[in-house]
Image (cartoon, rainbow, N blue to C red; front, side):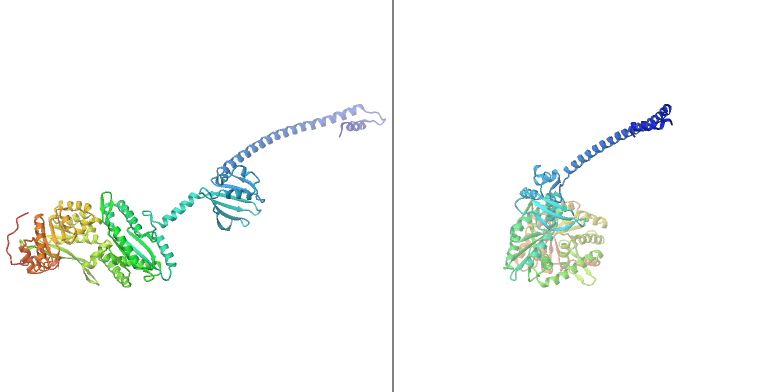
Length: 632
């Protein structure tokens, strides 16, 4: 109420009955009104003070929120522009509302290109200008995103600098979209490298077994009716001995050289692969089979027959090959590979260094061979072997001076299995080391039951030098039997020295220093027997029985025998002639002053239990009496 109106109201209330104004009452009313308003003023002042305080707090909160918002905005910009992925957002009208620095960097765009409101069409044109001229790779399909109303699109850009950019576009329900862009160049290269490694041999760079199978599959599926496809399975002969003697690193270097030579022989028109450690394969197409593949195999054989070098060391290699030809030997990859492998096994079983074409009867033979291998492994476990002993006869003393240990296999079903049937197989599958170790132990044990002057001769294969610790095996056998080393004679063939002379010689010297005698067996049958005699001081040479057959009636054979005996005498080596089967041969060798003989004329190999009987037999007389040789 306005002050004037209030005052008039108070005057009206102070009028007395006679129409005069009661001054005292009017004063009281005015004072009362003042007092009421004074109280209201105090309340108003307090309210104003409260409002001022709250306003101050509110302004502080607004300031804090503003600062926080600015901080969040800066943080958002930092995160947005430091993302490893490019990001851009377009509204429902396909105009740019947001993008980051990485997006600009990925596509080589400028700041001006990315002003707010730029259309997606304009930007796409500029991004395509940065491609290498080839159309971008697309997935060709849309896939649903998490939300039902969203769609996901994928595109790849091959940029002019070789980079690959992948874009993932999420289209929202209102028509706007969010795009994420990534440089996947390194990932793609890594994936391609992994794919390459999965299909190639890392040592030689050749296709591996998986890739080769794919190539064979594809070639067979595309084969024309009049076309033949040859598959060659190659295996390096006795390559394991190179790894064992020279080391795996040296073996790898030689394998790389092998791959290069085979690659040069095979040519670019044929597919070459490395299937495993020392195994390779070639796929050859054409119409002129088997002539083409025969020529290829011969060329490979010639290339690999040339020496390989690792540093100053020279290595000789040979190769065995199995060949299968489609469609005659199979029209499926598995069958063709299997048949080539069967032919390879026959090439190795026939003496290595050759190729064999698959024939249907080979498979049956391989089944028999696999069964024999299984039985042989069981024989090693069950010790189904026994030793027979053939006497070594000293011609000057006219007595048995020792025995050669010869292994026999008594199979519970097959019966007696000849050594020529299972020893080569044992060498090929790696069982000869275990068998040889068993022979050493048993022969030394048996020899302890014989008179002190009777020696025991044991054959040692090349594989025992390369695949086992022969020195330790011999020491353990002698120690277990408590046999003097001087009673043990180890027989090796020229092939032992041919495998790796530099590795074998230290082993032979270590054995000889222990008092063990070393003999060269089958002397004269190899290519370099004479050269090997000068490389090591053998205690004995054993002349192969092939030189004995005609010495009685053939002057040339007699002359060769005479020369070898003189050679042994000149080198200070005892000479043993094997295969003596008649009294005439014995008499002639007595005249030639040969040291020892061995053969069926003295005795065939006999079981250990018959050794005492053999030692009790009277001396063999060739009809010649001679004085003992002077000590050499």
